[in-house]
Length: 104
Image (cartoon, rainbow, N blue to C red):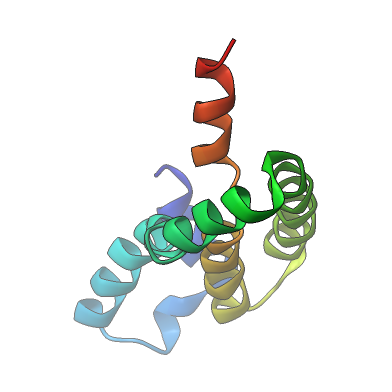
């Protein structure tokens, strides 16, 4: 969560928003990743049951690369916000990875 105050300095959002909205955005910028994971964990589990764990790992790794590059190279706060959400939504490899490490 150390990146949250830095986001507002990088994107210079303080000029256009009030202090209350700034606080709400600070809190949601850190949790949008987990909200994306919350919304997509069940579909990723069903996808892994149907097609196997390897495609989930491959798509998860590819999406982490793509959306992390978008997040790191953007100049817009809202694009960074959306990229963090998509990182969480496409990070479906955690559930199948836990199952994979428990099996012999």
